[in-house]
Image (cartoon, rainbow over all chains, first blue to last red):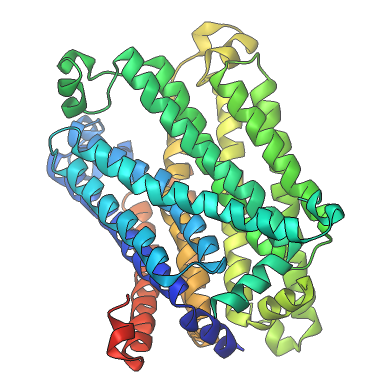
Length: 165
Length: 165
Length: 165
């Protein structure tokens, strides 16, 4: 049975393409978490007193601007990459052309990578904001294409079905 | 191939219904992010020194209660809408009746909209908390229905299968 | 139609196993949210002035270390359990053996439970950090197995297909 699932997944190239970039972005988020931990150790700035105790004393239970920068980058990823994981998966199901879909995924991927780079390396404003805005474009596009696909399906049904939404 | 997927999705009305409300809620989260950015610009309160520099100077690298309110609304959405995206998708797979499923999705959708409204417009307590609690009801319901569906399937298998969970 | 979906899901034991642990982890996250609310009420520390007003006055609009501890536990869950929901679902589609897959899910589940326990009960460092690291191992493993499955599929296709990724 796992097999038939596998076939469905692997044969849907749009879905495979979506999964490829999504997994890379999830790994990127894990790397931000690792960097945050390294910055905490290097700057000796811990979020919990028990961690500070273990690393030299309660005076290291404190905030640090570099740690907070990592956390903001991670938070922004959560707010944007997680909805992409949902929208991209559903979008793969509505049968877009592979080239158009890949363009959506690739733009999102590249500009989220740039966003993280701009955040962690403190690139000059508005690099980070621009990367954020451009990466949102394919997401908005997918959201509206999904709604359009649903409504075109609803309209091809009876009125009774349509009001079911 | 995209086609067969499309058929599966479009013909599962519960799933289509789930996707419809989910995409609207994702768009709502994007709108909170846009509002947060607008409030930052209006109040001149930026989370990063490089942004503050660009908008008049480092004195604008500061916190602001209105920005923090938007962030709390967004954070609460992440904590509640994201698990809904998972539970709702799985729930669509266990074959609930369309009317019951739609009631679950609609209650969640309406009360999460009210939650955001109550947060951003500072409606009198406990409007926001009530909206949060009521929106959790369909989520808890779906979670337990999913567990029940899994266990009923496990029990219909052999004991060997059952302990596999 | 719901039926055929149901069959696919229920017959894929890896997916059922994944859903089982995932739903428990989502419920665990909901419980952290409930605990956070209880701590707010007990310590009289509210994030919003309108909540503080309702519970005795604006002096209760304040931060509290116990509330912040709950929030850090919840935030860490969001950063780790949410990517697991994605990776685990995709991993279920690439046809892993049930016993290997169950080991991945079980390790993640047990060590995320320990992570929450270590956070909320302030267990001695580095219990919490170790639980975090061990729970990441199956996630990293799944991420790379997914990428390997995608590339092995890409390589079995024509070169033209391969560069499509």
